[in-house]
Image (cartoon, rainbow, N blue to C red; front, side):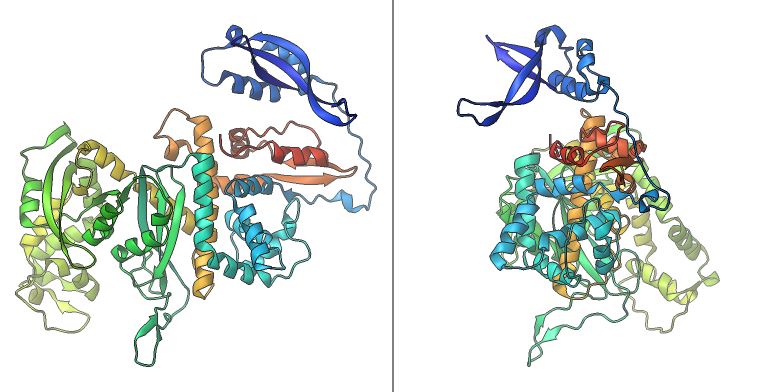
Amino acid sequence: MFVEAVQNNGKTYLRLVESVRIRNKDGYKVSSKKVIMNIGPLSRFDDGQPDYVERLKKSFKAGNPLIPSLLPYCSENKAIETYRLSINEGSPDCFGHPKMFCQVLLEKILEELGLNTFFASYKAFTKLEFDVYGFAELLIFGRLLHPASKCATIRQNDDYYEPILKDFNPDNVYDTLSFIAENRDKIIRRMNTHLVKKAGRSPDVIYYDVTNFYYEIQDPDDDILDEEGNVLEKGLRKMGVCKEERHQPIVQMGLFMDDDGIPIAIESFPGNTLDFLTLRPAMKKTIDDLEFSRYILIADRGICNYVNLLHLLDTGNGYIVSKSLLKSSSADQAWTYDDDGYVVVSPDFKYKSRIVKRTVKDEDGNSRQLEEKVVVYWSRRFEARSIHENKRFLDFLQKLEESPTNFRITSLQSKSLRKFLKKEFVNTKTGEIVNSSDMKGYIDFGKVAEYRKSMGYYQIVTSELTMEPQEVIDKYHGLTQIENQFRIMKGDLETRPLFVRTREHIDAHLLICMIALVMIRIIQRRVRDIYAPHNDDAYWSVGMSGERIQNALNKWKVDTLPGDLYRFMDIDDPDLARILNAFNIHIPPKLYRRADLKAIKSDMRIFM
């Protein structure tokens, strides 16, 4: 039985109906509805809050209807079933073997992303003989639930309520990686198409940032050269600036994310690729072909290169990016530090802006004119954080200036001092230890003063000339959300260290991690929409962390009992209950039959 709303003479009425099978005039059984109870007009019961009918349906299904007269019809008020189990001593049934049931939710999400039909169609096209989608499911689910090596992940097949693979060759997991890599761009396009259609994705802003993942190997990849020594293909695993300060080969990864925190696309680059050199190739490979309406790209100062920004303008889009203040002209710095023109929001925050004209060069070396808005702000909180993060180094500089002969400077410290060296002097001394008295003449303490003065100030440039400065600042601060993506990938999903070696398998591994991250974000968004539906800023505060989602899903298990009966495990876990409630999944306290388990998946709705 279920509640439905019907129209009669322009008014909405509620009624309780039951699905039945009847014979039509041709003698065939067809589905029909039997009216159990005419509840009455909606206006009599509507409490004025949004979505009353949907809330009524959910409450009736949960056994606690908003309309008390429906209570006798709830399934919970039917005769209580008594279960009789018979297990003989010595029977294998004496021991439980709970299996993961969370696969039904994860499978449904992949189906809503269109990946089941994609793999099925391309498998038929390529005439693959193994279950490529089953292997892909195992790799994605394993990355989300129990990150492990590729072979260990395949061994998790029997841990699921319904094993995903039947009669398989484990070695096909590497063929699956090759298939995923070969169709990487098509998979990304398919997911984005379905997110646009089903989840309403139409990003006004797109965030971009770069991180890297290390390898536990010592030697980087060699470049592939032709007979004349020209580079045919760059090695991917290269020595570079590791975000985790490891001295091992790394792979760079650029990640695009929409304004709802869901990844859009990824791209990998050799580990020694500078951040600003990754944006245009990544956009040309994926984003430019996704046919989004106009968007604003938001990125940090590592991406602030006018060749990149002109590419965005030429494709009809915009940008908001930070720009290094210390690398700006002396005139720009003087304007920033001048108190004139600032809007003082509070004693702890002020900002000002202006529109400037610039002459810059495009990727072909041609000079171009552009206008952009420059927004600068000072924040006491940002100043305090900068001082705290650099306190040790600032104290060192102060003591060095006051008493240089008392210090011996290591090569590591001298590296940090490079930006403060006077250009008119050259240090010709060698060796790891340098006497500080020899260094005194090289330190430009005027630059040190400028460095200290800049703390608390931040500079942002944007193509959006009419956007209010405060909105520019707020939109830019959304970039911090992408750092949460990287933490989940490096922590909960254990994306690194990387173990696969070939370029195609590295690309496939990163895409698998991205799909798992998309699934986590979809779950987080659904939790947010249920528990804080009217708070746009609540996503990162009330949404469940990746670790909590991972732990909760691992608790959603089902155990087989004699008589083809099943019982759920840990269904009262608070985090698991939160996820189930967010997806309107009701698990009443009873034993289940196989048909009941199938109905749970068929009733799921991923996107509201």
